[in-house]
Amino acid sequence: MAPSLKVLVLFSGRGSNLNALIEGAKNGRGYEILEAITDNPNAEGVVRAREHSIPCKIFERKKESSKEEFKREIFSYVEQRSPDLIALAGFMQLVPSWFIEKWSGKIINIHPSILPAFPGLRTHDQAIAARVKEHGCSVHFVDAGVDTGPVIAQLKCQVFPDDTAEILAARVLQLEHRLYPEVVEQFALGKIAFPKK
Ligand code: GRF
Image (tube, rainbow, N blue to C red; front, side, top):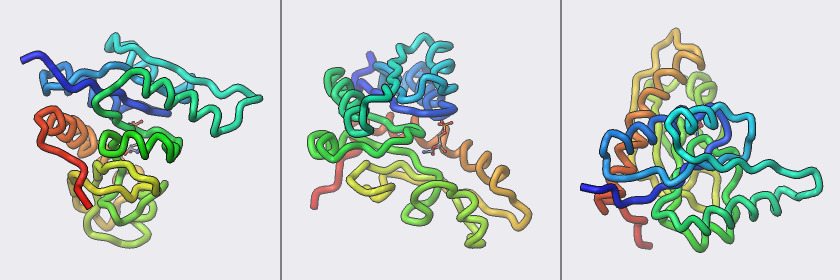
């Protein structure tokens, strides 16, 4: 069956989740990566996209442009591409509210914690400081808050007493690479929808 769901992936850094999503598409999970988009010309993910021959659009903020203008430029471009799904994968910008209003239910994000625990940054440090027994990752719909949108799916792992943030991050990252392509596949199958209020 030809892939039907057209996915844009937005990233800012390493791009390992971008890589996992691209591999999922190549492994016939029923979706295709239209393009990878970044706000960071030096992101390692740019190399990942090129290695897989996935088009990569790079945005660079000009000195004279405000953060809002820069984001309008990026998200106007996203809109022009008419994707079926927008997957944020380590994209370090808040999605502007005008875009969320129009595209609600079609923007998802992967976050390295079992939401609602530990939103924001440095989640692995937070998990260790809180001495939790379990940690993991979540894929959720994006809403106007920071990591607050409805959770779609999660994977969990154990936290061991001698874990460092780095060791824990590596364990969680493996789960992320499993979870994200699985969720996008479920979208492609029409099995996931934004919850009705
Ligand atoms: C991942 O841990 C993801 O959950 C978070 O940012 C990190 C991005 O890593 N949102 P990578 O760029 O996908 O390797």
